Amino acid sequence: MIPLFDLTRQYKEIKEEIINAIDNVLSSGRVILGPEVEKLEKTIADFIGVKYGVGVANGSDALVIALRAMGIQEEDKVITTPYTFFATASSIVRNKGIPIFVDVDKETYNIDLNQVENVLKKEKVFGIIPVHLFGRTVNLEDLNFLKEKYGIKILEDCAQSIGSEGIINNTVKKSGSIGDASIFSFFPTKNLGAYGDGGLIVTNDENIYQNAKSLRVHGTKKKYFHDEIGYNSRLDELQAAILNVKFKYIKKWTEKRIEISKKYAKEFEKRKLDLKYPKTSGKLKVHVFHQYVVEFGSNEKREKVKRHLASKGIGTSIYYPVPLHLQNCFKYLGYKEGSLPVSEKLSKTTLALPIFPELSFEEVEIIVDEIEKALRR
Image (cartoon, rainbow, N blue to C red):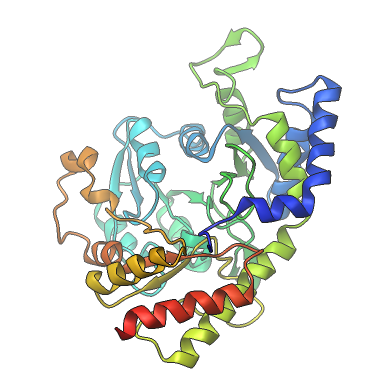
């Protein structure tokens, strides 16, 4: 058995530290918005290179609260990608905004910023939510150019990309560092994952910071005095303690993911297999491989490989089987099959293979061997 993702291997390595961290929280009696949350907020903000962090209950809430803290109004239009997790687009609708879906680049799978600019030339738009998909950074220089040229808001969705990098003005920047606000998810499968839900908003804007802090606790800046109707969305103190332990290993775990991706690439190249796979080069961490996603020439090939790997006990997943513009709940927006062809093709031809820091090179060889057997049938 080779799972798509395995929390248990990692836990065995850091079990004692995790148990001590949990015991410290419970022994202190401070279990809601305590020092562990404050420490994590500062740690992640410093890591990204921004001033402020606000811990919230999960990544989905982080998107909703960040947009609202940024000042979105009813019927404001927000551009985003259809090839991502549902929460990205639903956060716009939950704030009574209107999503505008723009297709993705066929090489990076990230939102096509040229198409974004075409929309900005024609329509008044509140902002953009670019997603650094599967751990690969959207082109930060181009994103920053659009922000400055069109005066729009940017909310970076970094749920899958903690630690990924890009370049602006010949300077290395982390994903999450150039938006008006950015969000992170600590869902257990993420590169920095909790043992439950968790999320974080980061920003350089003090108004957004103060708004987000208030919104996460029912719209209060002073207890029992409510300026607006907010949410009950606090990052749990226990989860923050766990994440503070895990953060010490994020660099090592990221480097291991990149090494595993290079091993996959080497094995695919050696066998000359008929599939498209991500490649890495240089020291810049453009891709931190939250997922390792390969692309086949057809839906039939993808399904054949998926079935064969399942028969051998090898886990895979499809991200994402139905692009957001074709979801039933978004029918009212008027998109049809064929509206965004790259996203639609990827939904039918891509497959996520196992990747996590504890995956062995021997297991990668087994996975690639079985893919070769399936393709050569």
